[in-house]
Length: 388
Image (cartoon, rainbow, N blue to C red; front, side, top):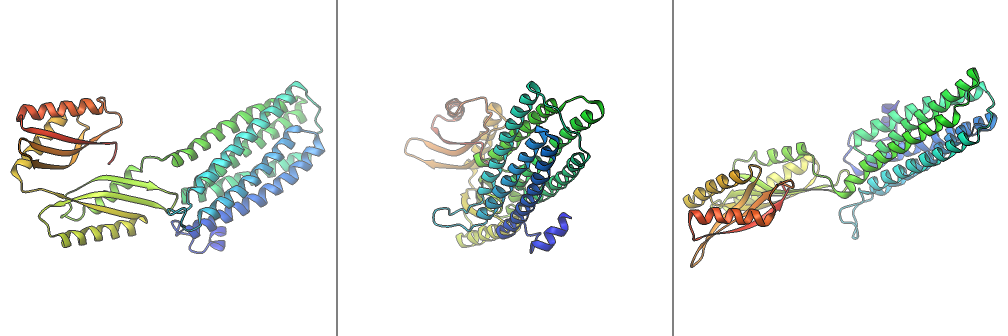
């Protein structure tokens, strides 16, 4: 059913990095959510009025809030599809994350309201009216919500869209909520035991926990996550296919929303290479990475001395020193400049976030080691924290 809807309503549905295609997916998911949730709200309100069960009425308003969530998702995807402008040069893709956060907040709010209503029902129980029609409505509601959950999860995973994944989680939570209401109703019908309030409390806590988790998953990309290691390795390998490029460092990946990834890095090339040839190599690397990974790329050339015996010898010494201090340390941008009284050994030191030593201690230890080799060696160390 999901494949049928996407093929019928979305042109070029497999081009998921295209902002227009993503906007169309969001429009489809939002429209389906609005229609289904309004239908569920209507039939559950009728069931609640027939039985006098506050849990069914609360579940109905839960679906009404889901319709509101679908409207937020729809607006979020349409706004995220807007092109870059003067005020937002990197586009509006992160609006998808904000939409997901709003959906999570609505889940938490509805869970709290359901918890409050359930506690009131435990403290002040009221008799229920048994109705086969209401039981049938609840069963149908569970089936519809199950389909909606799978529908949104399939599209959300395909697009890697946190808003849709959050909506999917909400749909599955609604299935649990409605199932609990149904079980409590069946127990009352056949055993005359009113578990309505207790079922409501359990479901409310479950819904609130799910809302917390979806909020956490949505906030993380807004704060800025470390790039996917597999993506970083694939980009590096793509660039290093050119034998003229000796290494890569200072790689940064900026995610401004789906389809809006910006990558920058420094590529090491022999210092004696012709500048125009080196420029052509870097251009070809940028074009291939951009085409293959659907991202914007900027590569800076770093000339490296490869035929300097002293530089090569001191690089080996530096590797030995770093290995004795902490094997996770590494360096790049190594060069030597001669002054009137000393030799300046200049390099960038890559320090993991969890390194035991602080920056001051690291600099001191490395400088002392080089002074032991030759008192005229003076280290100029720039520290990079956790940057590839």
